[in-house]
Length: 204
Image (cartoon, rainbow, N blue to C red; front, side, top):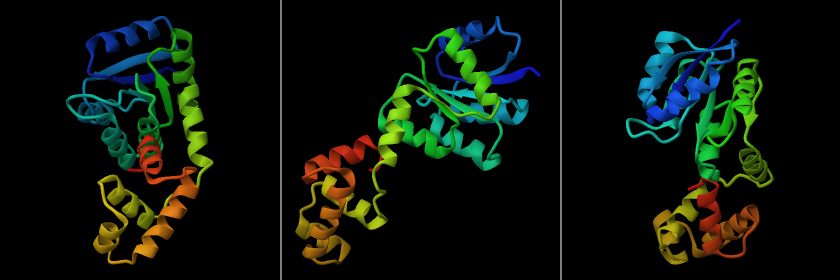
């Protein structure tokens, strides 16, 4: 059975390049192309593809909200592969958490791209090595609680223990306790490192 594919990317040269790379493989048929997240959602609704290649950052609407919209529509179909130039922890975590089935970088070659599309259509997850390493690192750390995220968000905004305590109506001692837990979970020793690591992991 032919794999029906939609490509979502705001650069025509990328859409044309990917289409050209896949043209020689009889297993894959490019049935649609979109230049924004909302357009990708509309194309999927109209064309019912098996797989979507989704860029993350597009001027007309980013990829993560589009992934979330497609997953609200159907948790399993289509299979969604992020194809992007970005491999920051925050981008990877956001895309996977939104419901993407794989994360690929645009530097990959033709054979890797074809294999990824075929694997995705068959129900397998596909991750670039950098994405896999990032997700494994996230799993090796405990999740912050909602209150800990609140505390760290206020610290990131320049708050002191006293102003954070006042803003959350808790004691300074409780703020210090939360910070100790945050440091332990993030594997850091001070608030500056905690804020930096939290941003890198998409927690803030």
